[in-house]
Image 1 (cartoon, protein in one colour):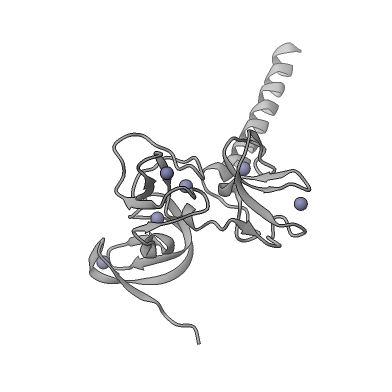
Image 2 (cartoon, helix red, strand yellow):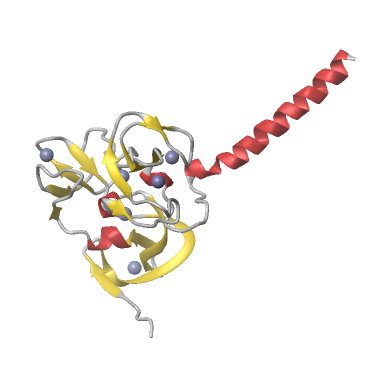
Length: 198
Ligand SMILES: [Zn+2]
Ligand SMILES: [Zn+2]
Ligand SMILES: [Zn+2]
Ligand SMILES: [Zn+2]
Ligand SMILES: [Zn+2]
Ligand SMILES: [Zn+2]
């Protein structure tokens, strides 16, 4: 049988947190990033945290920064971006003090290699730092870390990597709607133009 997982967390000492899977979005109270699906949650207080953020160690060594161990800290005062996903840091973060290297706890969980991933089944994808290129999923520029297949020259942003086949609906994912609006706008102006012109 499936087991219910409960934890106690020092960020929410009033009640224990239960691990649940929901499709709805939440803002993680630890890293302040959006999340969905698996989370630890207190129903009474509507308090949600990523599973990764709930259990991340205070310090770790990662292949993304092999020179030094990185340490968990509260949000730094200066504006920094996560080196892996390039999104801003708004909450708890892993940092290498010497190198000013920053990484979200969730991003620290990305594996170096992905085998037979649903987004690129025939070859192994490797998470690496490379020259600027284009992401094969969102078609936007990809300047830093990405999952890469050297055989196919495929680059995928970590944020564009979906663990499932479903298309994510977060911030960037909404561009399908924007596109629809733009196309409608163009048709409307073409119609307006032809009426005006003739
Ligand atoms: Zn989090
Ligand atoms: Zn609570
Ligand atoms: Zn990140
Ligand atoms: Zn370092
Ligand atoms: Zn992308
Ligand atoms: Zn390939």
